[in-house]
Length: 201
Figure 1 (cartoon, rainbow, N blue to C red):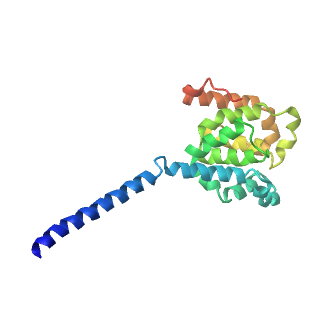
Figure 2: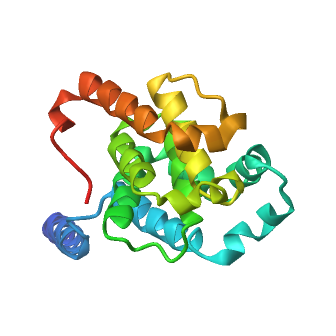
Figure 3: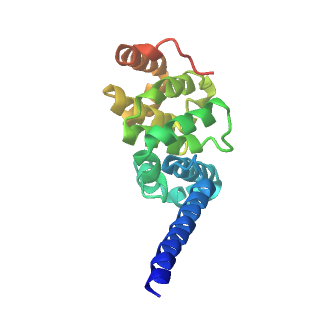
């Protein structure tokens, strides 16, 4: 009997370990080798960017009487802090949407510019400069509206580059926009010379 047990136990252990190894092997084979937490953040960022491109996102801002109020409401919106905290991912995705003209609403740029400002995201400078420089002269009166992105682009440029801008005189700043954007680009080229030759479409 002892001899039988001595033979049986190793066999059972071998069978158990063999089953465990097969199970582990199957788990490894079935796992996603490309699984990456950053991919989850990319998917969530895309979802947030889709939501901020809809009118419903801005409804709560319609009670606002000025740029600061709109800014405060947007900063408290669900998803905004995620964009800011994950700017290495969200920044390039926002810039990509700007370049590809994938925005359904012009007001969406307000969210982008505020996020760039709060994160101090310098790579956005050339894109905000391009936006400002391409505004038509007919927008001179419209920029006074807190739902026009111009003021928020200036807010971002002011914080990132250190320019002192009197945002209460926004129509006057519109007249000075070429000088403001030239100084912003000079700052960008001094701090990021590798991006100096890149011009947004």
